[in-house]
Image (tube, rainbow, N blue to C red; front, side, top):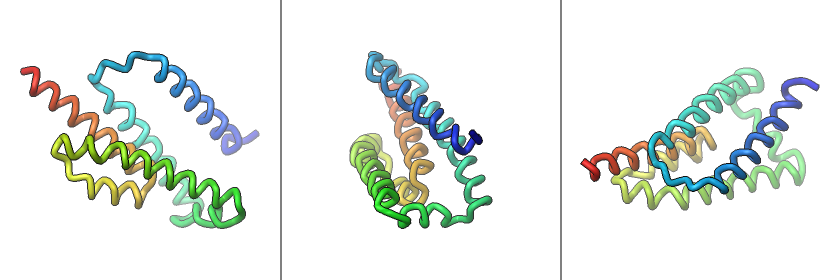
Length: 134
């Protein structure tokens, strides 16, 4: 198996592990939560940039129009991004963040923009909590 065949399995396993561990944790500590989405944003940007260099900037599109499963994956990604935006926009507004540039970035770049948006909201939330405690 090549790394291209292995990487999705590793990512799926890591996602499952994260989901189980996070759902079982108390999740009360707000300090530094922004660091994880920042790290994943940078790593996924690098991977996406690499994919774009090797496959072309629109190389993802043929995969989504190839067959019904390609359509299903595209719709799934759009729905997941929409749910995340739906949940993040009110938090952003409550923190005084204009969500429109972040939403546009998310629509244009997918998870890269969404992870950056999440990281910024969590960072702003942590700093607002620090300011309130001081």
